[in-house]
Every structure is written in structure tokens, then in C-alpha cells.
Image (tube, rainbow over all chains, first blue to last red; front, side, top):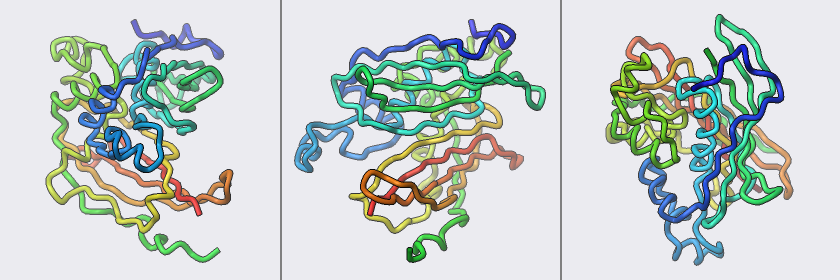
Length: 138
Length: 151
């Protein structure tokens, strides 16, 4: 069940969501779904030729994983605004831990809104994404 | 600093594209980022929740350009050095959610050019916008992609 606005407090954590290990299959699936065929995300031969250790994940793949935190907590139709900055590359084999926290709560234009901060961590201390979102709750 | 030659492109809208948002794309995209909520997959459940059809995952707009008719919906050709580019970030703003069955008009533009201090000098930040409108011309959402170019 989605969270009710009246129950939310600033500082509340959102439920953590983990992607156990990024696979090359994940990246091929995301390339097909998104239409992003930059070869650095699926062509290992090309990626190593330009000096990279391997292919790496689309930033937008990680932004998509972060949605799991939002949707589990606020429901699929809640997003009013979602903004992220990409900070570090995500490599195959890495675990992606997605977390969030409530930073604000307000009513605006008849809507009950909550502001949250969100992040993905690929190893302790390495944030691949930091971002924020405004969510409308019931 | 010399004026950026791409400045003349700012604010110029490209040719609009028509996007038919379909259930297959929504399901495929939702699956690719690990979403499991039935509202992305099961039309009966989506309608039970009061949606007209399947709801789109919030980052779906990044994928919708590929569903434009041939030749439409292209973003302006910014002159930059592809070897020096970084995807800085993305922002999505919603006026209402997107649903399967929506027919949206997508208009792209180079929204702004800015700078930020990087580890090895100033980086130029290009913000590209794809905005999506309903048949009445009301905006549904806007996708902003920030790309930076190093020196």
C-alpha cells in the first residue's frame, strides 16, 4: 500500500531496494527498452579497445532502478518531478543499493506533496547517482 | 570566453513528432528497470486503480523518441566534441502521468547553455528538453537532459 501523506515525517527513510548484481544482459535489455544503443553499454570489444575495463551501465538504467524505491513507497502515479545527477560509473558485477529519505512536506495547488532525496550506491561510499523527487501522495 | 557557436540554437524547436504510447513499450521498459507493480503490466489492475490503462514508468519519456515517425522528433544538431561529453544528469517534470493509449506530440529543443567548474577546468553544460503535449496542446511532461563538454 502506498504511504499516506498525513503519516509522513521529515527524516523518514524510504524502503531500500537492491539490485543484486548488474549483468550485461541487464544492459542489453535496457538498451532495447530505451533505444539507447551507445556501444559502450553493450559492445565489450569496442569498450576495451578505447581503454575501458568493460562495458558500463547507462546512467538512465540506474535512474530507472531508483524508481523502485519511489514506487514501493508512494505508488506508480506519484511522481511530479524527479531530478538526478550522475556521479560515478556503474560496472557489471556491481550491486546497486537504492535508498531515499523524506526532506520536506507541503500542500500546494490542492496537492499533498512530499520532497525526498534519493541515491544509488555501488559500493560503500561510492554514490553513482544522487537526486531528488517531489511526490504527490493521497 | 568566446561566444558559444551553439548559442543560436537555443530555444529553437525541432520538427514535432507524434508518439503513440503503447502497452508493449510500457511493459518492456518497466521490466528492464526491475519494476514489478502490476499497474505497469496488467490492464485490469491498472483500471481497478482508476487509471485509463497501463501507467508509464516515470522515466519512460527517455525511451519514447524511438517510437516517433521516421525523421521526426530530432533534437538540434549541437556542434560538440563527442569524446569530451559526460551525461551530467536528467530531470523529468510531470503535469500528469502518461498512460498507454496516449497520443502525444513531442517537441525537442536546446533549452539552455551554461557552465560549471570541473576537476580539470570549466565544462559547458547543454540542457536539451523534450516536452510532450496532449492532443489539446496541454503539456503532459518535460524531460531535461544535461550533457557537459570538457575543454
